[in-house]
Amino acid sequence: MSFSKSTLLSILGLVILISFIGMSYFNDGILLDKIIVCSVLLFMVFFAKMRSDSSNSNANKTNDSNTGMA
Image (cartoon, rainbow, N blue to C red; front, side, top):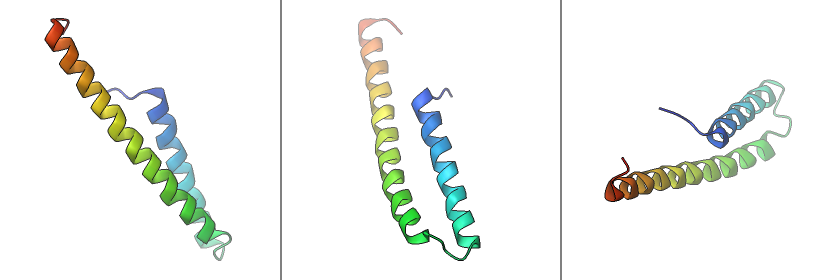
């Protein structure tokens, strides 16, 4: 399974954001409410992008098989 560069960067960004949430939680909730809101929004964007990328790759495979380029 190969990942595109943008997908890997998005996953890395989410991991960093989760680590910020953890650090904020252990340091008495400094900016925790703002970080959680941002993480929910970024996760929704990431999820929509992953769905879009997977549907585009499926469409490309279908087009390739229809043209005989598989």
